Image: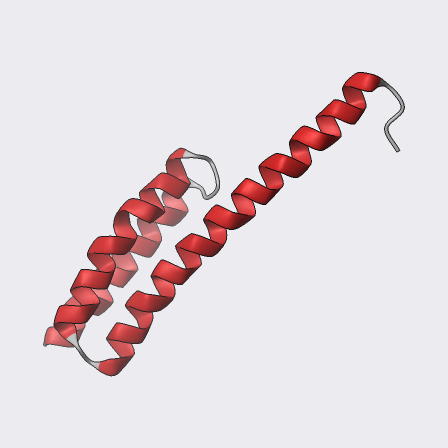
Amino acid sequence: MANTTSAKKATRKIAARTAVNKSRRTRVRGFIRKVEEAIASGDQKAASEALRAAQPELMRAASKGVMHANTVSRKISRLSARVKAVSA
């Protein structure tokens, strides 16, 4: 348990940041899920549109430090390849 005033404030700040980060991570997962569902349905147009909507969200998560930049890059790359494969 925090004893000093500054430690108590730090605890509050950490809780607030955690809530924001959790919200952002959940939002990103939702966008990824939409892309994967469109891929599963076999609709190439819907999948590419979902991917186009997901990319900025993923990049925002990377820039805000919620996810690592390389992780985001890898996810976008793999999703792009899967969307491209749907049309083939």
